[in-house]
Amino acid sequence: MNIIFCDGVMPPEMDWNTREYYAGNWKHWLQFRVEKDHDVIMQIPKFPHAHALLMKYDEWENIMDFQDINPETVLIGHSAGGGFILKYLSTHPELKIKQAILVAPWIDTNNEQPNGFYDGFDLNNNMVKQTTCGIDMMISDDDMPDILSSTDKIAENITNIKVHKYKNRGHFLFSELPEILDIIKFNK
Image (tube, rainbow, N blue to C red; front, side):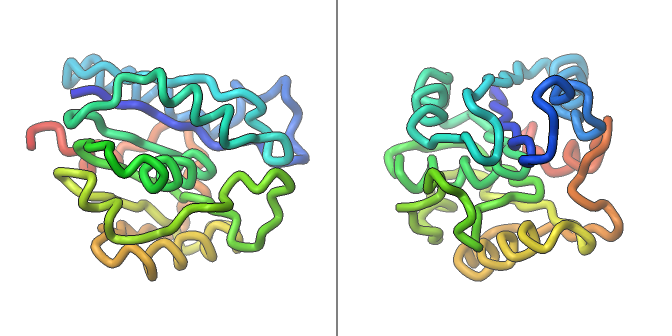
């Protein structure tokens, strides 16, 4: 088993220099936990132009194509990274993975992305069939409106998705996210 983590992007108002230090950087905590406690390798690829107004799907796709994705892979994505995982699965129907976990995924339902990052893919149940343990989505009741719009659209179109609802967790911008350890299918 291996895990590939797809990070979100910085909002337009965020400074490039603070990216690694913002409070939501739980990915490193997760990497430590899964590697130490479960002896599972977690890769965190760096995607180019990881800024909301600059991201380009083909660049992210090229990076993802070099990852070790196999039937034992768990893909985890936060925010735009979660939306990217959905598009990547949709545009690569031959892929078979163990599980996908989307944490507060964003898919640009308001069509604000100038580069059309999320254009040209279909949200459907076929993505669940590409997994052996399904797709899980973590959402919070007080997340941003564009995230809630995205999670609603995802849940409407992927009927077999497992939705985990939380209260007062915002956009899951914490230094730790212990709830995700109960969602990852380590032993299945």
